[in-house]
Length: 191
Image (cartoon, helix red, strand yellow):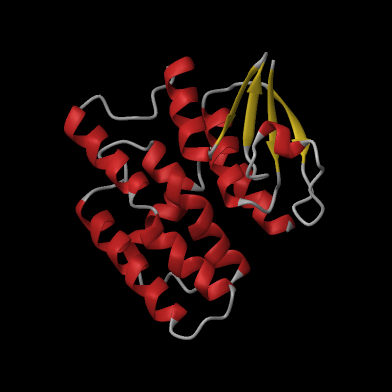
């Protein structure tokens, strides 16, 4: 049985929850209070961060790595495109995720000019989604899952208007029709 050390408010954890749901993988959830982390969590991840996936004696932190592991360990349904070029470009987006996360967290901290930085990142994603339906390419997949939790939280928790980014807004609405994503929309609404 898989155990996921999780925190509802954490978008990194949301990535893993969505992948687990998309693949129909059952798991046990251990909720971690991010404001009062238990000492034992550092035994599972020396950084003390979640998500952490545990399967038997195998322990793995870091959401992007966990998602790749789940994709390889449970290949159906596939969440990376079959085409190697699309797969590589999707992985490149995940690798360059800081282009969104840095301005997102700067805005959360109230740093000057943070909104401008986030708007640039959102405009870049919007331009990409004008050219293709999904960040992963022609099909929904791990690149979409890697970005979506921050877009949902920016929109629903931080009041970021997505109307200025119509392709990005349409993408988030399309994804919300998926049961795994709809469940995450509900989690964000409950925060």
